[in-house]
Length: 541
View 1 (cartoon, one colour):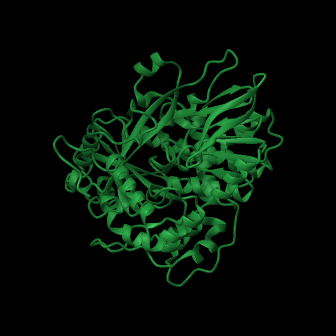
View 2 (view 1 turned 45 degrees about the vertical axis):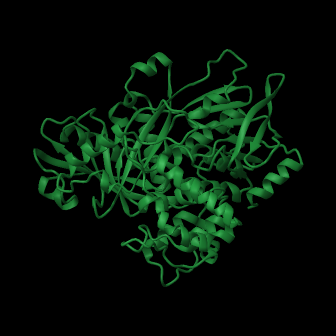
View 3 (view 1 turned 180 degrees about the vertical axis):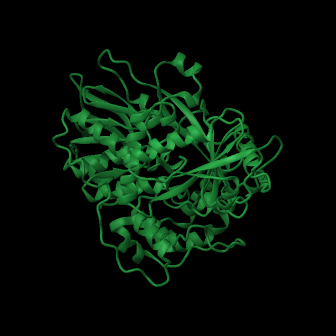
């Protein structure tokens, strides 16, 4: 695949024509580019910031069927998601991994164990598997030591899946690139160009490049999530979709502080929403919230003090003996979900958790806009978008073709554990041989007391990301190509000198640029990935 700077130079020097231009580099846009390029279409994907910068790096990491959607009667959404979950786990083990879920039941709580077991029976039938079982309070404690058992009548267990969402996006983009798609981050779609009302091209502006440039295409797919309404300029009577941005926030703790080996869920006493504590990347994550996000969408979303208190209350309810506090929090993240609502009046009156997570389309003479949907069903959404855009599915590759092509794995180095080896295969697929050659096959280490970074990240992965994955800013590397900024104290400040040693030449940054990027990243981490400032306090990094 060609480097970002080479592709941009080609686009600026000569006007190109594409079969489809995809705007938005989250999981939906990546999936569309994957299906388009895999179908032989000349494809361009552009993202105004970094790949997965928005919701697709800030989700709850779950590849699941949405059990609560089944409970609210959204059978089709659940069926499609469960089917896709099974497919993804089979295609990319190590990237999409099964995770055990435990739902404790307490006296007077709805739904009770009998009703919940009925839902799980339907859930299992959809997936053609049997993962559900009922646990006594004593058996529940064996699965989740330290869980509050006061008034507990038992617990339901079942299996879903978990992933690194930003890495999933990168892997799908890599597959698209291997099939010829041009995928560019930090390129903004300025406006859609029309000829006699029909889409004929799009004007683009790349960060760091003075003049905008234009590419020709009769099909533009707007997969920009919460920004979807910005490109909509209806040429007919159809109303543009109304996006209701909903924020979901999370707290990250050291695993030793809140040790869980499975996902534990409980309905929050405040609003009866399910909240999860689950293991991820060597840490424990607590989330999520669900409320209207009214801030500027172009600014990194951040958790509020009220959300922090909300999540800590459920932690105290689930794990009273752990007694976690704000002082234990490693990092936070907040994502904004692009939920489509029927009207502004409805958006103001309906509770956020009651909004449908179904995706919706708007079609306007060559501009296909999409919003909503779930991480798990990105492939189905992608194929529907292309079918609508082309007016037929005959040009699409066969439905049975995999998202991730099967590739023989190279020989495992002796110093890499079998568990980490499976993660590496899942994360990088056919690129793994070049990853292993990029740098030392040694775990990334920090100067903190723990020494090893949770998750067994290798220096070779970090260097390879700098060389091959369009890292433009330091936060791309710290927050999305790797998760060092989320799993290390203070955003990984202590590891930055060693990171500079390994990565500066790969990024081709001089000392001045490296210093500017460090300053920029640490300020961003303080503003959007740490706890909110209390009145009269200041961050110390």
